[in-house]
Image (cartoon, rainbow over all chains, first blue to last red; front, side, top):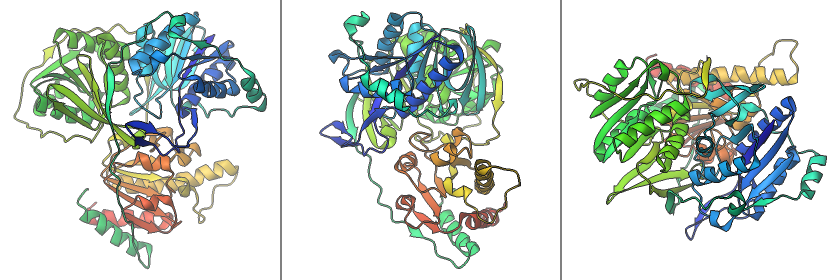
Length: 256
Length: 337
């Protein structure tokens, strides 16, 4: 079983994100593996443990994104590959998907590609499906549970209405959600192994493709208007009195 | 401008944001509603009532269950043959995939989860939240057609005119699917948090009711979950009186109190209800950005210093196990339920 987990490096979710001179700033906040992608690594490792095989973490990003790959290695991934090229500075999702699909092809013999649900930065949640479409492989999105039996894959997809059970044949592309299982903490041995790992860097030249054209582009960043709210604490001698007063106030807002 | 509006539905239940998308398309010109499934007469009728100029249906047993590949192939072929300028979809779990794949087929881009869409000259300019609402961006797509998914409740719902009628146009179906739907396990949740007008949410605090005696034989973790489930019953009763959905903080879902599908916040779902009632939720930054576009936030917490009070219009400092039932009773009386 050859599994690829696609990850991205993003600003930590605690970060105060601001627009500064038309650029996004996250201040002193650390860059981390996208939290949803930790579930992708976990999902990939669970399948490796059940079926045997290898897990390779793949990330597009600058040299510093090797830290996110090291997190995946520390969790238990066998290999990591950084795709880095100055021509990839302004990728939209379909561009990223073209690069990742090329990396999957170059790796050869891949059975399963696992993504997180979306990233914390752009948050489009498109790249997994676009990678599947370019590869011509089945796409199973928002997967909460995986059952694999030889080349037969059956998953539970977590959708608005509940769960949908879908089956297909490998190779396939998945995106996973939290129900796949809590991401494991990197072990001490894992961290040691990861800190020593030499992570290969693939350029567009290595992938044999030119830089994909970007079809979606940002015109301007906007800081959302801050809401100045003063909280009115509802007083009362008893829960009933407080409730009476609070429901009157809510109903007076005429939003129900 | 010629727009296709994808009417996303599950077994005939339409995601309300699909009608909102229809309203946006009407403001831009010719509007064709696109409906996939089997037995679509009622939906066709409703689409005309909400203002569709045409209704294009792929009414076929092979399209009964959503399948990403078949739906994308059918939608892409339709957009190509009609030289559409724009495809609008409500943002749902299905449409993110569908839009993503159709964009590859049509060599264009997708503008996702928009809260604004305007025509500047002959160019569509979109506004969308990024970093889960910590920032917004103005963005555009240079491909044709432009594909855009619209956030639920960000655009007005068009009026429904019961006297408007029309007949559906059948379109070619490309139902080849590499995967097979084996079945469903549906949840009982009546209203999903993404398009709910009212959300009552519970956090870690719902598991702290000291006056309960758990059944014998539970270990510590099981006791905690049992306590939390009793707490979520109170949350659910208030939500039900208000016709709303039950939400939860990350702490509550991580604690195993309630399934992930209820999670509100940066790593869960970003919501925009008219009324959001946070019960026993302290208000981590990730939760607060997720409820940023709620119109009215009410917080109930025993800790007067909880950060949730900084974003709430009304607050109650007190015991949620006493306040919640009292609120439910009071709403019942005043709403005549």
